Image 1: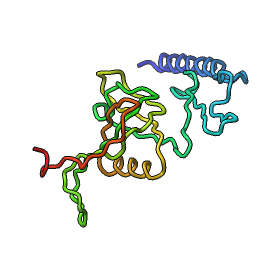
Image 2: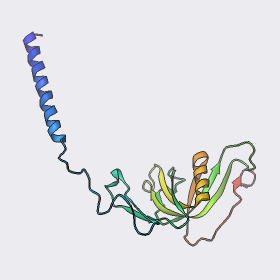
Image 3: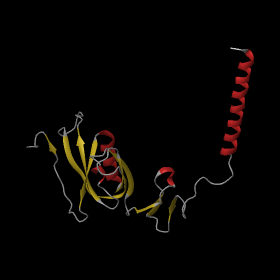
Image 4: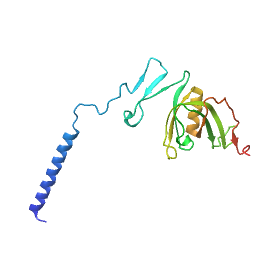
Length: 187
């Protein structure tokens, strides 16, 4: 290739780069305006009632309206992430009442539990909020549950070391108990 033509191509390339860099600089230059503005209230604010929390959820925590929920006295909000089917496949809504079941696969030494085992571990749990894919779509569901300290320990333990399933119940369901189902009593 001719040396003069190479210099011309190089000069044009450098000029295009410089013009692009200047356009990018001026296009992205901050004008000291906020990127997004919170709608009315701060992102996370406690009102005069210490049990009410306002939390913005969604992309960048500003694209959706804040979600308000009340944490019952003596309870705490605990988030649990579940696969679609064990997480009710998109059917649960904030305010629902659920039962929580654990499935135990591991055969740990020095345990009196038969394994495998499926057992009701908590009944009548209030769902404060839920983020799940639409009904029939795959993906995980994240539940925000109202639990006391002992309930939270149980749910966190089984979510971490075994697996959980959630079942929708009526809000007025009476307390229930179960001995669980394993190979020894399944039939």
